[in-house]
Length: 142
View (cartoon, rainbow, N blue to C red):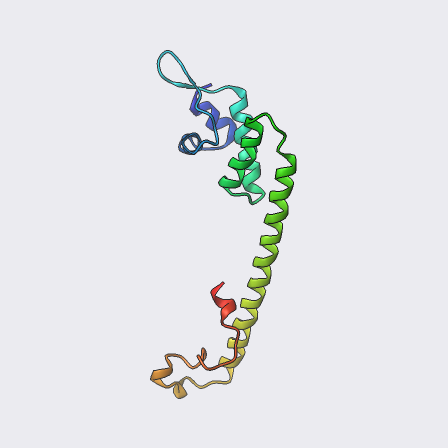
């Protein structure tokens, strides 16, 4: 099938399919005598796998590593499980960081409720956020 039909079948754009080819996620297809890309059904299945993997939160680099196993004729399942476990741990860490950041912001909002804007010294920039305060501002940077 031609690239337009593959795009329609998989819900991807032609540009995305060409990009996946350029980064090695999708093998370059055969060319028809007139020079058109001629994809087989395996290409559609691989593109569906890529979309499902991205929907699971995997990066294109992680997906490339997974499909490399299959391209070598190996089952990627153990590798996929490892990638998913690492991804879940990273998400857990991000959640903790976001909760800490929210707590800092809520503390700053509570602090602001007790401050008068007229008391803000120009040298302090904004007295809601005070550089000498003991807030965990590190959480705001993560």
